[in-house]
Amino acid sequence: MGKTYNGWRVVSQWEEIVGKDLARMAPAVKFMEGTVFVKTSDPSNRNYLSMEAELILKKIHEFPGGDAVKEIRFTRFG
Image (cartoon, rainbow, N blue to C red):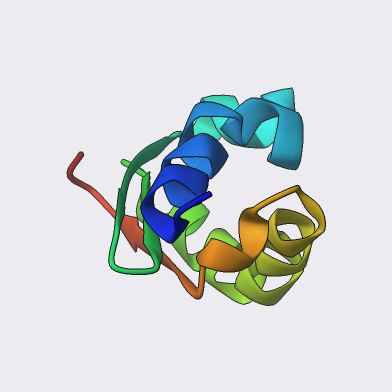
C-alpha cells in the first residue's frame, strides 16, 4: 500500500493509536508528505504534546503502515 494511504489511515485510526483522551484533546486532521497534522487549540496542550512527540511517533510506527509518518506537527488550525 502507498505511503499516502497509510498516512491517512493513521489519521483515521488516531484514537486507536494514541488513546481516547489524547485524541479528544488533539485530533489528527490531515496527512501530507510524511507529516500528520494534529489540531490543538490550547497552547499548554501544544507544549505538552510537543514534548511527547517522540513517544507519540513511536506509537504511530508500531501501528501497521505507521512508518509512512515521519513527523507530527501540532497546529491550531485543521
